[in-house]
Image 1: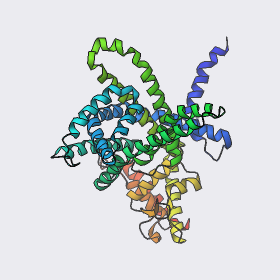
Image 2: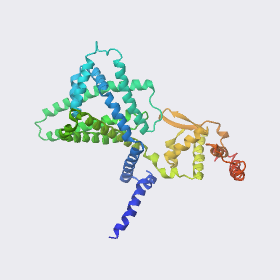
Image 3: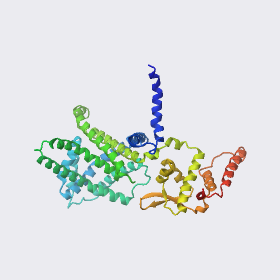
Image 4: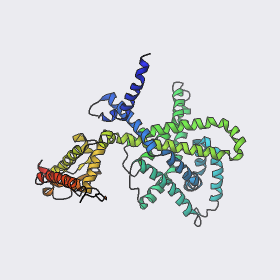
Length: 444
């Protein structure tokens, strides 16, 4: 039984590995399947950690409320567009087929939509109703985008002009996409029915029809993860997240429908009101799946930014000064040689500096007015170049700026009680600055 004594230590080592050590393993140190396995594990760990940090349950609850308010307005707009194409009946059947667990709610909502659509004259909504409808839908999509931007740490959302154009394009394409998927399903089913006489193909046809909803949902989520955040999302990262979200959503759909056998017991408590709590539960869990997929997309694309995170937070003053001078040296030397401005990713990749640490130092150098951002028009990437004459950028000048960055407005008596201590520290720092006041960063 002596092995039982080792369990606490093994668990402690495992916890240290998944929280610290694994983030010290870079892609340059491992290759092949081990690299893939480590990156996969890092992605899962980062997504789980940020699930709690970003309070996805709270965000999902807020989106559930917004969605509940927007169901009828969104359906009204979709059916108005579908009616213009003459596809409103097909859209009805497709929605009922795609959300079989919500037939009761959808039927009631469609009844409200039809009564509202009867107020349409000449295909145009009358009065202020259209404004309220559009505002409700735009507000929902804007709230979704804000949640995605928070996950992706994007500080600035779309402009009002882009919101109107992008969101209206999305609303216009949504019913068209549903109709096209319906037409494709009919075409495929017709094609396979003609091939039913070929017994070898029939089993594959059955598998295809079972997987078709998963494939459609996967690409739907992939498009959402690419389109909604106001930043560039790689297709590979969005697709991996789409696979997770699509499979999880469809599996939840089947479980939800299977679980409706308990609705009869639920009705005994809530009566005809039972559909609403079930709808809220379905919306809440659906948004959790969607937002968790967004976290996976972010984690997949940004795992390198979290390498050496624990060490970066605990970096020594000496080593941070060394990296600050080194990064400034790279930027000034490239500028002096007439080379293109350099990006944060290239600096991190070329010199094996953790991406988040590089970004933090670049932000500090911008705040100290040593560098500024430029856009590389070829790669559409943010790059950095000196903002002042490189003949005036010295090591001593940077160290002096670092010393003076931040606040010193404290009620500490450095003029009398702690006068000698203050004089000593200022003098020692001044000596270091003076010793390097003429050493140009570009000449290091």
